Image 1 (cartoon, rainbow, N blue to C red):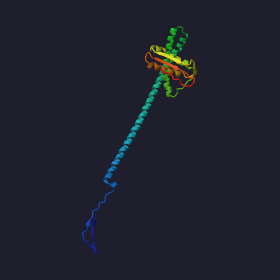
Image 2 (cartoon, helix red, strand yellow; image 1 turned 120 degrees about the vertical axis):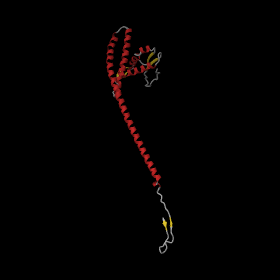
Image 3 (cartoon, helix red, strand yellow; image 1 turned 45 degrees about the vertical axis):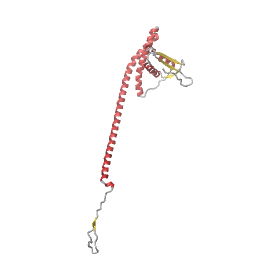
Image 4 (cartoon, helix red, strand yellow; image 1 turned 180 degrees about the horizontal axis):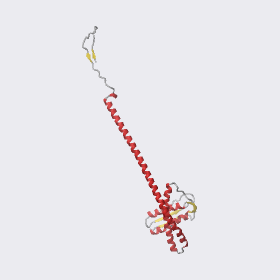
Amino acid sequence: MHLRALNDDGGASWKGISLRIRILPPFWATGWAYLAYVLLLVGLLLLLRRVVLQRAHRRFALVQERKEAQQLHELDMLKIKLFTNFRHEFRTPVSLILAPLDEVIKHEKDHTFRHKLYLIRRNAKRLLNLVNQLMDFRRMEMHELKLDLTAGDIIDFVREVVYSFTDLAERKQMQLQFQTNTDLLYTQFDHDKIERILFNLLSNAFKFTPAGGAVRVFANVSSSGEEEKQPCR
């Protein structure tokens, strides 16, 4: 800016002075501000890219997980179908063995030979029990496993299942005991499922009990409705 004074007649009285004025831009319009804008934009773009990639990875992982779950389900169904076919193939001959065997035992008079026949019958029933369990896998998968209640003496039923392991106890030189505080308890229960539960429990007991040990089964009934505590060995 240049300033100069004038006389009354309009002539310049002196040369004047020069004043330089510089107007600075606001802080948001400076070079540093624009640099910050650029860096912020780049950071936002990188953050957005990272979020998109993470979502894509999660989506891909979810799809893969569903595919694996579907494949495992199909594999399980294939196994169940295979086990079911095996079950039908094994059940028929075992059942055909048990039917005439019961007739032979009924008419056999020799005590020693009768004991051996009982041993064969017990082992055949164990095999049939294992075969029947294969069918339960499919029934549980299809939610078709239901109770089939039948009246009977559950104490005598449990006793018979327990003593079917007598030969196994003798081979392992183990003690097998069954104790109860009642001789008779007539009630409704699922014979097949109770038998399978007992077979599994006793099989595991003999499997994990060392030779020379003891397996004891207690079937006590409380008249007061309170559960009696008994040692499980």
